Image (cartoon, rainbow, N blue to C red; front, side, top):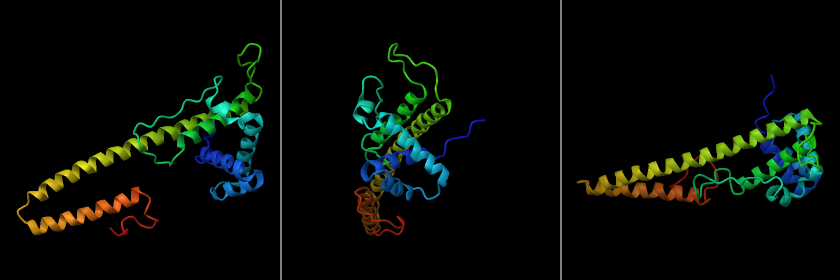
Length: 210
């Protein structure tokens, strides 16, 4: 039975590629390594070799690979506009790792330039690595969209709950109590606006002052 791909493989390949591009091969690999301290040394070194092989296969020409006519990479469209659980540039990162996987696939199962079709598989193990990479990046994209959808549904639910509460308080006979509760709700609302705007610097959200 085939062994499942490491859960951090796709993220690590992206990190290695980005750091190597920015810092160079040795320093880039070291910097990326610090982000994945729990990954074993043999596994990490094999990932570094994969990225290097992908670069040698032509992944440095990212404009051609990501947007090229021969092997187009379909961009990821978020289900909910404005929701980016993984941060800006997530779809570009997925496109880049798919470009690496495609380059590995082309090395393992090359296209005959005369016929334009793939011929004999030259490296079955490398082809499996590429296929596992495609599956993992697809899983990351699916989770990204699922998280975006869940976040939007939760936001809509909370807005509706708040509307019901505010309506009840405005019609309350105890005006003093209603005023206190409204003030508290406004503080809570302001607190989470700060979180969304990036003004929260860490620590427990539950202990964050309103």
